[in-house]
Image 1: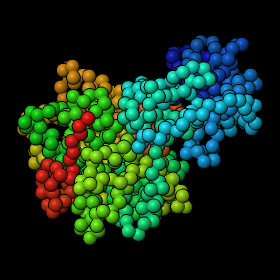
Image 2: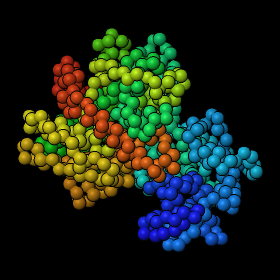
Image 3: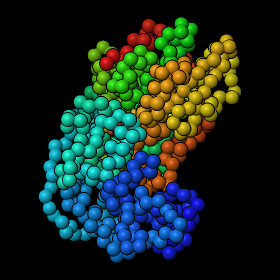
Image 4: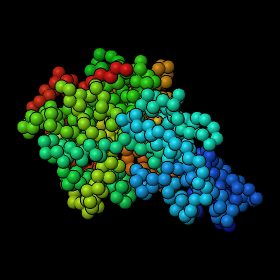
Length: 572
Ligand code: SF4
Ligand code: SF4
C-alpha cells in the first residue's frame, strides 16, 4: 500500500493505483477525456492534469507514491484544463444542438464543468468527408478529439485493428489503412468503437426515418421484435438505473408507436437452441466439423470470415435468432394472418450495430425477401419513443403478442456471455436423458472471465467439452488454442462484444466517469439472470409455441423446411 495526500486529504491505496483512481475513492472527480477504464490509459489529451510540486502531470497514468502531495484544484490546474478543452473546441464541428450525442457528450460536459463560455482560439479548422460507407456505423472526423479510445478498443480489445492514427501534428487523424472507406476494411461492425467514443465522431447508421415511413404506410404490416439485451438497458435512456428491467414497458411503448405486432426475438432464441442443439448432437454422432461454433453474433461471423476463413464450416448453419424470427414472420405468420408477405416489414430492435450489416446480407433472405428489413439499436428505439412524446416511465407493463412472442428463461440469457451455451446445455442434457433436470444453472459459463470452459457428461457417457469467449481479443486467443491443437472442444460460443450483447454496440452509451465506478456488464447481466429466474419455463424445448411450430409447420428440428427458412451457409 502507499500513502499520499490529495487536496490535503490523506489516502491509502494499493501500489500501482493511479492518481485519478485514488482521487475518485475520496470523492474527487478529476476530469478526463482519453481515459477509459480497462481500455485506454494514454495521457494523450492532458485534460486530467494535476499539480505535483511545481509540475503539471497527467493523473491517468501517474502512479501514486508514498508521501506524494497532489493538488487537483488550483488556478494553474483549472487554467491548463480549460486551455486544452478550448483548443479541442476550436477545431471541433460544433453542432451541439443537433448532434447525435447531444447531452451525452463528454466534451460538452467538460466544457460546461470548466465553465467555458467564450473560445479564445478560433484558428484553422480541418475538414473531412463523413464516412457513410458502412451499413452499421458513421464516422465524422470533424467531431473527433483524437483521444484514441476507439483505436485502443479496436486494436487491443477486439484485435481487429481497422483504425489507427495517421499523419502528424495538426494533421493527425484517425483513419483506416490507405484511407479506405471503413466498409472496405477488416472492420467487423461490432460498434465497440462507438461505445468508446466520448463525442459524436462515431455513431450508428440511423434507420429511424425508414421505420417511421413504414409505420405511416397503410399498405404495410409492420412487425417488431426485440432482442433479450434491450430490455435490461432501454430504461437507462429514460433515467432509470443501469440494469433496470423494462420488458413490459418496452412492449407497451412499441404498441403505442404503432407496430402491428410486437414480438420477442427470445422466441427464436428458443428455436435456435432446438436447431443448434440438434446440429451439435448430429455432428457429435458423426464426428464431423467439430468444434461447432455459434453463429448468432454477426460481428463474430465477420471476424471468422476475415481472420479465420478456414474455420467457416465450423460455424453453425443456424441463422441468428432475429433472422429466424424474421423468416417465420414473412413465410409462416403472414399466411396465417392473411397478409401478403411482400407487404410485411420486419423491424428488429437490437443491442447491436452489426445486426444492421447482417440484415442486409444476401445469405439471410428467402424468395428474394430479406428476413429483416430494418434494424434499430436500443438507442434509436429510445429516440423514437421520445420523439413520439411517450412518457416511458409511466407506461403500464404489457405482454408480447403471440405466437412469436412467447419465450423461456433459456432464451433471455442469450443476452449475456455464456447464455447461448447454458441454454443449449439445459436442452441437450434433457433431450438425451429423457429427464427434466432441476439443476440447470451452469455457473461455469457465467461471468466476465475472458475464456470460460465447461464439461458436461451426457447420459450416454459422452462428455461435451465447451468453451465460451466474449470480446474478439479473447475469441482470437481461443481460436489459436484450437488451431494449434492445444485445446479440444466440441462446442464454442463466441460473442464479439466484451460481456456479450448486454454491452453491445447499440446499447445506451455510458460515459467514462460512470464506467470507472460501475461494472455495466455485470449490472445488466444480473438483470438478465434475474429475468431468467422469474420465468415459469426455463428450457427452450419446453416453449409451448415452439413445440406447436414444429407440429404445425416445421416438422422436426433440422428438417428440410427448417433448413430452408432457419439455416444458411456463409462463404467468404
Ligand atoms: Fe473496430 Fe468494431 Fe469499430 Fe469496426 S466497429 S472499427 S471492428 S471497433
Ligand atoms: Fe451484436 Fe451481441 Fe455480437 Fe455484440 S455480441 S456484435 S451486440 S450480436
